[in-house]
Amino acid sequence: MANVPSELMRQQDDPVWFVEERQLNGDWIAVDRADDQAEAEAKLAHAENHLPGTYRLNRSDW
Image (cartoon, rainbow, N blue to C red; front, side, top):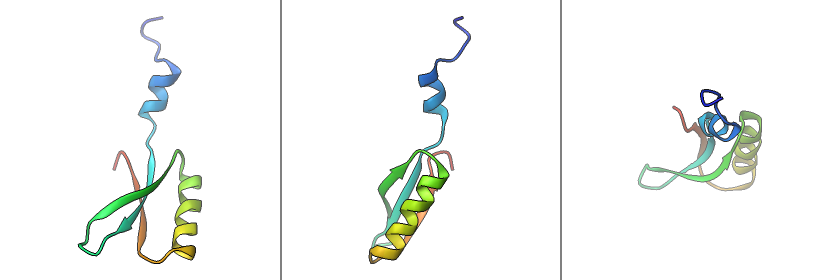
């Protein structure tokens, strides 16, 4: 049983998605996060349609 990864360990291996906003100096900072791609794309669409600025998605394992 010691070789079987726990649910928590498997969850930690899953990538996290970040919605990032471009700053005036060119840096990108995370402004929101999501646990899956569909949620991340919905949050990105909301940011692009309702907030000023430039946004992108970035995955924690990229």
